[in-house]
Image 1 (cartoon, rainbow, N blue to C red):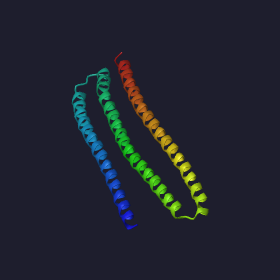
Image 2 (cartoon, one colour; image 1 turned 90 degrees about the vertical axis):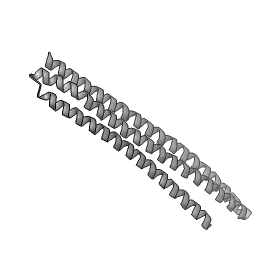
Image 3 (cartoon, one colour; image 1 turned 30 degrees about the horizontal axis):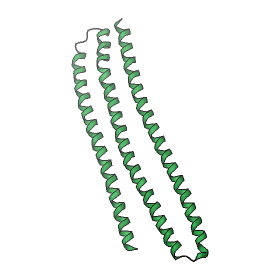
Image 4 (cartoon, helix red, strand yellow; image 1 turned 180 degrees about the vertical axis):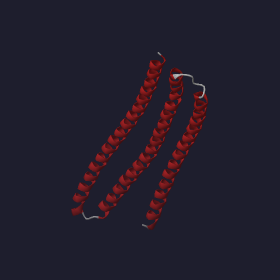
Length: 184
């Protein structure tokens, strides 16, 4: 029994380390993306400030606004996609660990029931068989719930990406339209 506890403890520790490493890797990736974006935005801002001094009229100001709006929006879109990708990677890792835990539980529960059947008197075997049937039903329910949760998460991520892309395109279109009006 103590070996089982040690093995279980080691397996859970390994999973914790795996999840921690995944979290750190995604945090590192997102931080690198953010730093890169910040550098680009600082360079764009410096260029915009320099060109602002050269603007002579409202049309020139509007053209400058359009010129610099698009890179800012593209950067925001890129950062959002990076955050979503990090979240997707973490979701996949956590889902993998959860599935492993469910599989281990199923195996352990089945083994425990088999041992109980072997050591139980015949009068109790009907109850044990009933417990096995119940366990199979619970297993089916867990599988269905797991599949549904994955589908909902996937749908949410796809909808989030589509919303970000749509909002970015709308903002670019709005900036372009306001520039055309100002220069017309």
